[in-house]
Image (cartoon, rainbow, N blue to C red; front, side, top):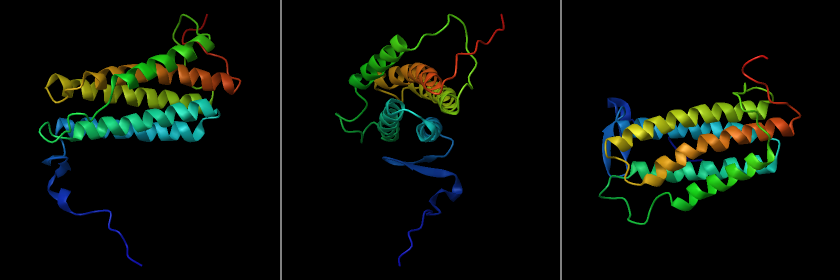
Length: 183
């Protein structure tokens, strides 16, 4: 039986590969890709705990979109294929799904406290991790490393989808929205 090694030792000196060359592990592109990877892992937990097929399907779709974004960010500008990257259609997809869920789930005009159900809480954790990833990508975009504006628009919309999807899962679990301020 051949055992595949999961390590190469190439990164022992603090560098890693991007598609097109090696960079320092604390390079802003690696930081952004790492934050997106954290988001993907948090979404995986949310998908594993989701109680509805709709939530599982939506989360899986966003995970696949995050892989596209991570690959897009990993390319150097000279190696990125001209037609590769996240499309505006994926941003529109998030808009449609967020609007559809918002039409189904009544929300109070106040802040809500996460934690009415395990699936909802895991989606809220994923939402906060996604917001951190968005901040890292915005920093990267401001330094000229993100050429595709759909990437930042998508990440901005993702947190809204995850918020309403968390409330959808809370409702599916019988949980009521709990307000941040007591009356």
